[in-house]
Length: 390
Image (cartoon, rainbow, N blue to C red; front, side, top):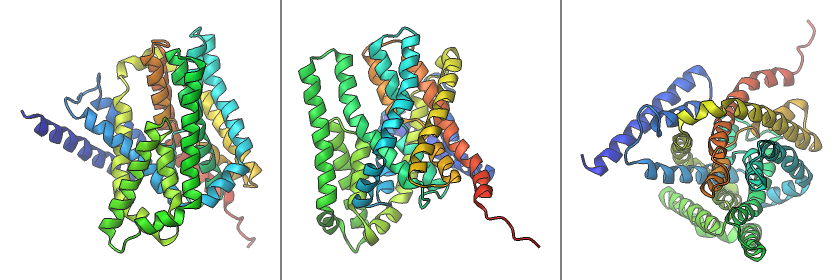
């Protein structure tokens, strides 16, 4: 059979399966994300129906999914709100680093994997999945909540921290000189600064360029600009997600509302592909040997993220229910964590690092959305005003 026909058959089967799983999730009243992850496990190497030729195509679709998730999230806010939130939550961002990088680093050192693997594992346990959290906030209608800007500021802080961390980790793994590592770090920081300045100072010019009375033209301009900036950011060792998010905040008002409405169907399609691809990267056969250790590490990380979210929300004057929602929204791990583990494994940091990181991320990627969905009714009851006496 021709390769193109196989790709169409595989993609058609996957997308149709995702539609069925999404319908089941709606009927059960749960998030579809865990089901998408399980579908990825089924279609990956070692799964029930391994893919033959379409995995590369799905990988690109997954990257587009992350870009669209963060772009549509950025469209909800403007540059002034972002800068103000980052300033007010800088201390919480530092607490986030300390509480959540420590478990991974300590685990690697206790296992005797060495300092380089410890730095890699620190990144694996530190970074929240911006893509999954964005999807949870949207699915549960938490976008307009008071704690959501706090969550977003922590996500952006983490993504900006990754702009510093990834060049340093890459240099450590490659064993390059201090000068080379410093140059990579300088390029990453310079790129983030330039994109932020453009978003803050020249947002109105970007809006004038993108604006169009025709929906087709508007969609093409916004999507093209987001992918272009994401690609430039990625090439300069900055997260593509950061680039896409900043494009979103550069647009505001009615234009942002129109763009978000046009992008939503595309976002949902490619976001589902992202979660499937995440599952594809995990070999089910490698999960059992590291499952207990990954579960223990995940339990510790759930507690540290809950503490982080609660601390940040409390500093913003948010009530107890909002603090709980903020902490739960930060639990999922995803794209950054797998990238970090992949870099470490490719450099030979330790052979068990990859399976441990994949199992750990899979647990939290599935548990985070489920926990958010299950805890929402309880939080609603807590915030409901008491009934007046009869």
